[in-house]
Image (cartoon, rainbow, N blue to C red; front, side, top):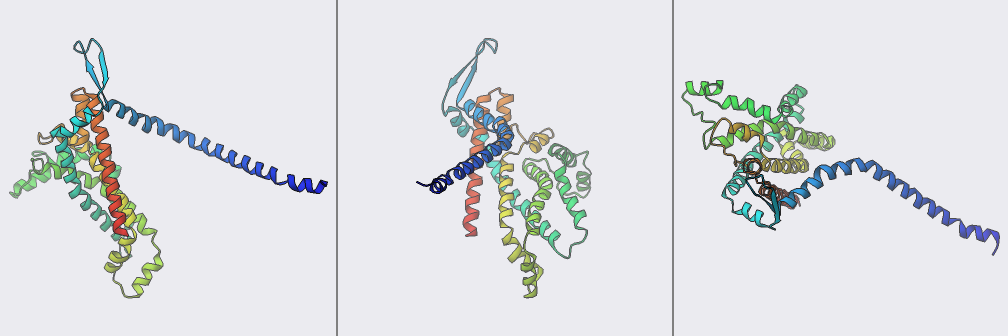
Length: 314
């Protein structure tokens, strides 16, 4: 074999090795950049979730009035059976489902209407009104709940005073109205946030498509309903999924309102039920079972909604 043939046969091998070495080097660099995120994700997501599942399938029994130590035993699905059979937890879940069925469509409809108005060419002072709509989201949820609680409380609220003078109903903290008073707080706080997501999707739409519809004689309402709304459907689905998750995780607002009225119990929402089980009854295992069950229910509802939305889009 000549020297030229040997060179030709041997030349591809270093190229393959060099390419493999380059890919391996890129992989190591990519893992190095991902390592901080993976460590934080494992520390604050994977490990806590795993520990919650471990607690949910165990039961800790105190002996000697808490001074003789404790015994932890594996109980399998017993804690989850307790969750399903607990009428307080079932009532809390049903209450939040009713809350979500009414509050989420109303909030997203209001957010969509505001986004369409801000995207309209006839709108004036857009930045000012966008800031005003988004400002409630910048207020911490606890602070917002406290502010609204003062507006609900008789003897302090100017709103209640005016309604009383006009002989109009004003039982914001009554047994039938307190749930919707809480819904008003969450709507006030989160409408602006959802509006910005929808407005960003509207800004990304091709302007030539909208101009073509206007040239064809479509009115502003027709452009909004037949072009803009269908094209921002993914943003609407995203905000709906976020709202479903937030509804089942409702905690701060009813906890604040609970200090004003006895119509909000310690187990008013599923998260409040888990909190009461852990810190009110000192039953961390049962609280973990409630939390894990709630996570599964939230995932199932979110997944079902996304599947229905995708089927409707097809």
